[in-house]
Each structure stands twice: as structure tokens, then as C-alpha cells.
Amino acid sequence: MTPLHLPDPQTYLTEFARLARTDWPENRMLGVVCHGHSVPSGYFVTPEVRPMESYPHLLHAALARRYPHAVLNVIVTAIGGEQAVQGAPRFARDVLTHRPDVVTIDYALNDRGLGRERTWKAWSTMIEQALAADLKVLLLTPTPDLASELLDPADLLSQHAEWVRELAGEYHVGLVDSYAAFQRFVQAGGNLPTLMSSRNHPNQAGHALVVQELLAWFP
Image (cartoon, helix red, strand yellow):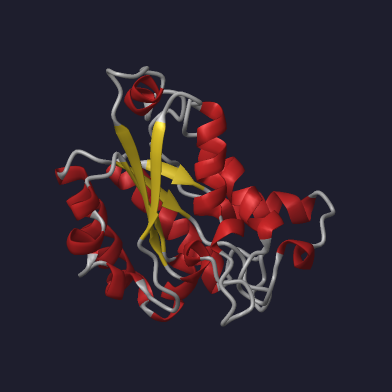
């Protein structure tokens, strides 16, 4: 695995945490936008969508518990079936117009047919736009696909997870390593299908695993 030069999870979102602990009437609304594909959209067994059991909603609830005086808005701009090359052109229109404080990007599961060059360009475009707007960025490695070999570094999904890690290091933004969290679960003896609602969509327990990785960035 490539050595990573990542920001400190305890300090990267310090300003967000400060604002989240600011009481009325000096406070303001804080926004998180979750951009990506069917997983943050809340698809379980397609075409069933269960957004209240997916990680954006679970994150919203967890942040509300962590920051009980904060006015929080978690917006989902994800589209089922979309790849990063489709999500990048609409990033300014659909994400930046909300003027969020934090953006999450989650496309690696669907990017497997793109190749490294197209994947890197699409993700870089979104990251650079977010940074130019002075936003904090959290990149998510993929959640599993039961047809893939989760513990095989040569598997295409594992390669995409590594590319997301490299992008986070390149741009010095937050890394939410969902893929590694699922790997740890399996290595500890867990049964991966118990975290999945279908071949390539997590169930609520799988989404909760992602939320634990996300929360590590919110001090």
C-alpha cells in the first residue's frame, strides 16, 4: 500500500466542530453533501430505496447526537448507477450550489470499467472544485461487491480502493476507508453477506460500518 500523507482526523474538521458547538444566536446551518452512486442514494435490493437506513441519514443522526446544539443539513446528490465521469460534470451545479461545509465523494464501486486515467481525472476534477470553494473533502473507498475478492489486492475493486487512497494523499483531504473496514470485519471472522442487502449494496449494518469511519473525522 502506498504511504499516505493525510490530514489528521482530529484536526481536519476542527472548524466544523467549533461551529457545531456554537450556540444560538451566533450559530449557523452546517451542511454536508454526499455525492456518488447507488450506495449513498440508499439503494438496497434494486429498485428498493431505503434512504433512512443508508449512511448519509445515519451520519446525520449521529452528528445530531454528537453536536446537539447544531443546525445540520445532510444532502444527498447521489444517483444510482452513476460513475465518477458522470458525476463530475454535475458537481458544480448539484453540489457546490448547496454551499456545504463538507463534501463526501463515493464512486469507486461503479468506476471499475473506467480505467485509472479516466477515474483519476474525474475524481480530481471534483476534488479541485471543492477545494477551490474552500470546502473540506472526504473521499470514500468502495463498499464491497460479493462478486469481488475483498481480501485480494489484485482484485479490481481493491485497486480502485487504493486509487482513492492515493487521491486523498495527493490532495491532502480526508480518507474514509470503508473498504478497509469491511476487510477488517472479514479478517476478524465476520460473514460479509450479513452486512449486505444485495450483491453490491450494504444493508443498514453495512452502512453503519461506513458511518463509524466517517465519524472518525468529526471531532
